Image (cartoon, rainbow, N blue to C red):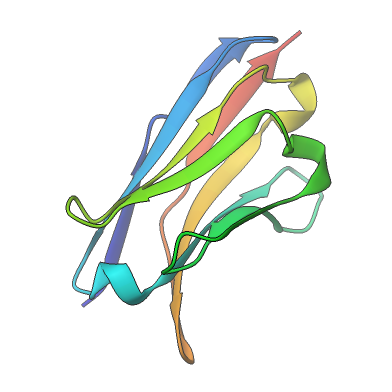
Length: 115
């Protein structure tokens, strides 16, 4: 059974930083495409950053230059380093793993950025 467990969320002032972690189990982590999504109240869930099994990365335009996604295939963990946070980054952040037609989600971690 695949499990994704996020950690690292919290409350931070605008301009601050947080690092989210997502530990995966029950899957061959290195072959998965991993992603971080977020959902603010009243909005649709959006892809923030993704990283392929070959470590190719993609970002939504609003976080380019501020967020960095990375993966550690030994620790089966994907990270999201978030710098220069803005109030509009406030959301629940979800970890996502995808391989073929299979897709898995974590439970989410709240990120709140105060102005």
